[in-house]
Image 1 (tube, rainbow, N blue to C red):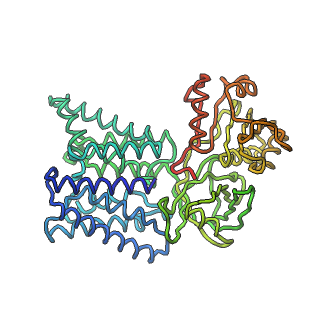
Image 2 (cartoon, helix red, strand yellow):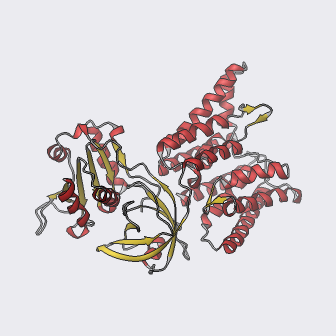
Image 3 (cartoon, rainbow, N blue to C red):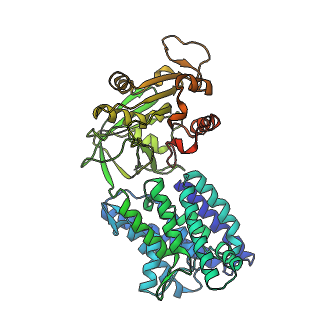
Length: 493
């Protein structure tokens, strides 16, 4: 996700430079270019100093992203008089990531906090010039791609709806033209850029869909320029900071430094990594963490990934299962090269792919390949807590050697009565030493193995293409969307 946002911001800067050169934006293109380069230099230097001082792994991509956002919301420098504003905005943005934190996790969106502080300290405010009519189309196109990638459409939509409704309300209340007010909001304000980029900053959003919905509504309500409390009017940055505070109160607040105890090869191209935490992590089986691993010469996918926790909350260790490919990313290469005693940073505990609270609710789990990890966590938790649930698990693999966590699955079958249906997807005919089914899951197979499928909640986990395909299959069978849960997180790895 981070790399996509970075490319998006670079694209917007490039388009803005072209528009400035053509006279479509009221800025000198050299001034804009200089301001962006200046912000990047100050941000990188400040981040390097703080990272060395605090001895932490810094995400260089986030430095570039923050600097480019500043370049899009602060007017380009016209003379040296404007440089102190740019300088302090960049310094405060980077400093907030290290100083304004709890358990090494920053509370507020760094850019929003920086421009808020500069408005109080040196009386310079962000103009949010990216919210110009000529920038609407590129902002919209790239923003939609980002939201599709991170699948936070509900949160972003709730923000747009809330802010739209408030603007419409005030325009009618004050006798203004609703059309003119909506046109100003959508074409001459940072509304779109704010919703697509600022609102979705991963480290400051709530962990679950329902909380994200409320987050979008709250920030959208406060974002409307007519919103005020007495003589104090809301600004984009204050709306976001208040929303960040709400998010902090309802979110996981720790940043874990984990130590590798051992790694175990559980399949030809799958390894389990077992980590020891400084203190026990409380989580719900099926949730995931963001894992940051600093390494040299990172490729285009960066140094962060999201992995589902494969261990149970009842265990002391934290385990993840990772699939490796012949052309794995530099991140996975570095992960595979870790030795016992090496450390990695984990944060952002989140996810809705968890057990239904109703213990009598019937469920169907569908796992493809490494998508078995959340189900391994869930089943191990059920075994350790002696909870029997009406569950049928379909486990699809390409070869018999790809089956992992078979000990957990067989124990769940024996002790809890869980049904497991194994599928070999790479074959069309019976295979020696394979007692499971052959082929992919079909509607006929589901109806045969789970006759009461209309009464069940379906959980899908695996590669995005597999999840999307089976989701369509379930919808065709008449399963309501509300009864289909998918194990999605940004950047399936």
